[in-house]
Length: 258
Image (cartoon, rainbow, N blue to C red; front, top):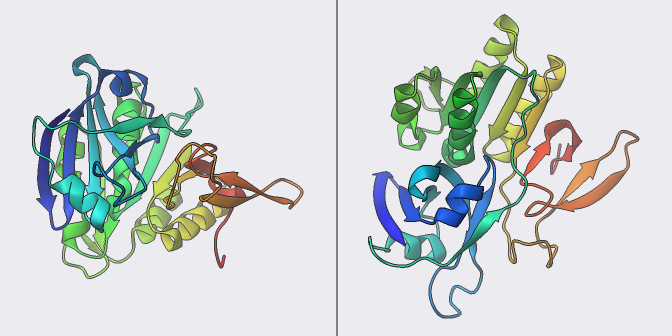
């Protein structure tokens, strides 16, 4: 059931739903598959990252951007209405016991799965720093909530309208130069993920990325969301983002054009 569905800024919205089953089982980096409507238009469900959970209250937060017919339908849902969701789905972020210092890099709505990770890592006693980037100030999301949890946040915008002027990968380069980091986790546009991967490899820091792909079934049956994965011998196989991911070790991913 929808409890809240409010506009954050621009086309970005936060929906909070009551779902004790999902809230109790969800792990950072997983997603839910939302049925948008009661008919056949739109036909396919929409994959939405789990942004936040309140397990004790059985509530789940979904941060999404209104981009098309499906998310426009989501934006019209009112408190008290029911929502048909499947989840939690996919493989999320896993942190090794010795990884205490994390840097999370988010491009725009890429903060959606990383906020959940930041909250969980902070609760587990890890040091977390979040780098937020976007084309402009409208694309900087969840900054206040992160700061309220005591998590250091650095912000950059492409047009210089807020925070540093430049790319978020520029901030990452500075952090990796001056600090010891145990792991980088990132979610955002593919060019950003390619740059984050290269910087992490250069500084020999493990890096995991959450991929954003169009999905049809969400459970691995249709093979519509495959991504190339390169093994240690250079051989490429194809994995489903919906079931093997959406989180992958960055250096294994074969990015388009990279």
